[in-house]
Every structure is written in C-alpha cells, then in structure tokens.
Length: 204
Length: 196
Image (cartoon, rainbow over all chains, first blue to last red; front, side, top):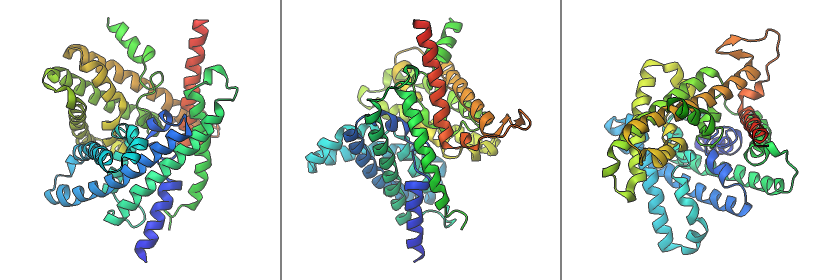
C-alpha cells in the first residue's frame, strides 16, 4: 500500500504541482520552439514521454548498479548525458526498423530531445531523494516519475500550442509580437498551475 | 576590438535576451541577484573553458561525432565546477540545485561550440566565451534584479523601499515568464524606435 500512495503522489506532483515546464523551468527551448502548431506539439510530447520513461529506467540502473557500487557518483553528469545521447540514437534506429509509422511521426523530434534539459533533469532528480518518503527513489518510483514528468511536459506543451494557434489571429502590440507574448501566455498558465500547489503533500 | 566584442556579447547578440538561448537556467535561478550572479559566472567559466579546448582540438574531432565530443568536453568542465561549488560555496550549491549539472544542456554553450569555437583559434574562442558568458551574466542580473526587487523588496538581501509590499508571485515561476517577456518587449520597442 505504501508504494501505491507514493506512486500516486509522485504522479500528481510531477504532472500538476511541480510541472516540469511551468514550475521547474525545465525543457523551455522545445516548449517555445515546438508549440507553434498543435500537431507537432503532440508529436514532440509523445516522443518526450517515451524517451523520458526509457531514460529514467536506464539511468536508474546505471546509477545504482554502476556508479554507486563503484563509488564514483561524481561522474553522474557525464555518464547520464552520454547515456541519454546514445539512447536517443539507438531508439531512432530501432524505431526506424520496427515501427516505421511511429518513426515517421516522431522521428524528426528525436534529435532535438538530446539537448532537452528535461530529460537530463528527470535523470538527475531520480538520482536524488524522493521528497515524499525521504528515501532514494526505487526503480518503480523513478519509472513512474519519468512517465509522469513526460505527461506533465506534454500537457503544458499541448495547452500552449492550442493557445498560440489562437494568438496567431489576435492583435498583439508590435513590440510584444512573437516570443514575448508567448512568455506572457506561459506566465499566465504558470499562474494557473500555481493553484495546484494547494494539493501539496509535502507537509504530510 | 575588445569594446566591439563586448558590445556584441552584451547587446547585439545577447544570448538570453536577443538569441533566446539558455532560457531554462535563466528563468529558474533568477530569483535573487546572488543566484543569478552565481549561475552567470558558473556558465561563463564552463563556456570559456570548453570553447578553448574545443578550439584547440577541433582538427582531431571527426565531423560525424562532433556533437557527442563537444558534450563530453562540456560535461567534464561542469563536473569540475560542480565539485568546486560543493566544496567552497555549499549555500550556492543548495540554491542552484539541479541547475548546476544542467549547465551541460544549456544550449548557449553547445551553440557557441558549434557556431564559433569549432571555426576559430583558441584566443578568439576564449574571448568569445568571455563576452558571451558576460552577456549571459548581465541578462541574468537584469532579470534577477527586477524579480528580487518586485518579489521580495530586496537587492542582494538588503531592503530597498521600507513599507513596500513585495509581490511574491515574481519570485515564483509566473513572475519569471512575465519579467523576461517585458524585458524582451522593451528591447523590441527600442529596436523599432531606432529603426524607424
């Protein structure tokens, strides 16, 4: 039972309370770069969920079985980024071979994901301490954290794309056109997401 | 020449405010001037060091695997920096948190490696690293100054206007987005004025 509560807590926290984009400021480049069209936002979101989940699982194993066992935690940053970069390449090749249809739709987003700080971010967070239990993340917890963080990212990205498609038609002051108005929109969304902090379990 | 380079890094090609690179750390740590300055200097250190090394060994890096090579070089300096910050300024370490390791994926650093260091000699790459890092730091100082003042009525932990009610939202996530939007808007406005 303990683990189920912890899983629910992690998911709600990662999707809503500590949303990767709107509360933690991770993955802003793709958030502003790919949110101009709803269809590409959905594609990017799916690709991020996928890579984040796999990356969480693999980096957790490497961290526990290799880095912590050998007492070389200071190599984390280098090892994680290499793992993520090669993982993305590998996934690209596997997808091309096995599911060409999926590759067609997600393929172009995969190279962009290597430098998406949200992926490295979730791997580093998983190497830290779970705020709810006070213990290090277990394998299941870090996998869930990966999935949920990806979903949170997708949620913010898709909402943003919907808003920006409408903004195209709006009469925006010339100086704010483009990136500034997108920032203001994101700020308003972040303000709305701030309301979820009322759901916080951190105190309990 | 130095003055021209400085102008390029801080004003005409400012990494955050003009090129919109490295937004994640810029918004996440600009909650107080102290954090902004720490992050700015840390990024400048990594940028300058990685620029020099990449520029020195550029002839030996095979074209196809250059991006992974750059990332490894950058990650090495980030790890060095991480250990240094942990050892000498533990307070800054806990404030910046995961954003220190995340300097690796700061697109400004990889961008400069690809666009500048891989094509120029080490001295120029070093200067480029310094001025771009300086531009990053200046932008962080502007953002964090506004946010710290509006959000907690302080600058460098000193009270600014007694009796002014600070708006906490500005040091939280939404404020970061609003402040950078307004700063960029002001820059756009100034540029349009100049052009017209």
